[in-house]
Image 1 (tube, rainbow over the protein chains, first blue to last red):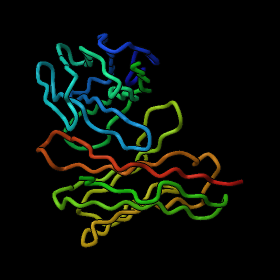
Image 2: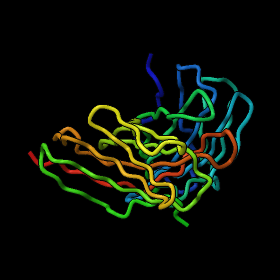
Image 3: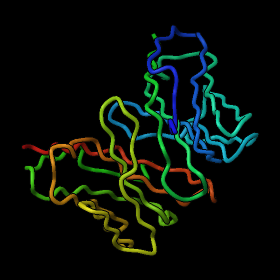
Image 4: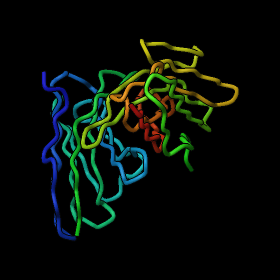
Length: 112
Length: 114
């Protein structure tokens, strides 16, 4: 049982490039989330999903897209990378509408 | 508008003593509160939670207290151990229906001195 896994661990992008951050969970959780954490700040919700085929915006969705075609996977897409997207990105999952979320180890992204 | 606030960026305590981490919130619709612990280069890990229908929840060395009238919660760690040194995040949920969206505070860095 690997829990929540994220790839890559680190990435450097040039302005305007695109990339996909991968997130997979093996706990059969319905709910999945993407957060970003900037230095000295708390985690802010980017997008979330309450089940396969269902996604919705969080607090800071601009510049990102998501999809949820399976229960296990919840990739986050950056289409035109900007320096403001330099951050650490965390994926999380949980079974239902209340309770603890389980977090992945994070992806550290730098946009230059 | 910061709905969940942790006003102490850092806290230093001696090993064996009590650590008290504080958190304030502004939205009275929050009905579930959680504390997460985060080590460098790792994801947050769940520590303890409390529902708004309770005022205290205890799990081993960790106790969370909730004061709804003051919109304040605190995490007590007794006794503190060097391995407790980490960033602690307070989080709240309950708005936005049954989506379990969490609103996080900015974190408090706890340093437990041997």
